[in-house]
Length: 176
Image (tube, rainbow, N blue to C red; front, side, top):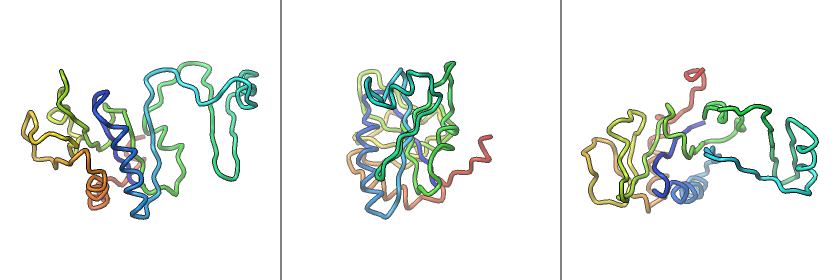
């Protein structure tokens, strides 16, 4: 499996880029998973549903599955700060690419998504894990030797990823 992060400030276009890169990778025959960092409480379940009722009754984990999908909901008794590596370990082994949104402080190789917004600083001068910059700008605030990709050309981003796939092979033993 190959893993690449997409890092950038809120509103930079990370989600939009990822949602466009997924089908571009799939068109190349790749199976893609996504790990997304949420900064706040979120819920994918709804009151009244069986799974919600099981959780309210105190279940630690609820797995719901059909012939088309599987969902695992895990309730932590105490707040848990899981690393991106813990989350990657939860994924199916048969995936070709894991696209990680958020976790900008992680030690994963990342593409910085940057747009010239009010107060938007670049991260690449201070983050050795940033291997490319995806932007819509003709020039960057600081020079770099890293590749500069067009944030609006997801097919080119997917092409760059597959052309450089060996760089993104994930070795979980390096992170334990």
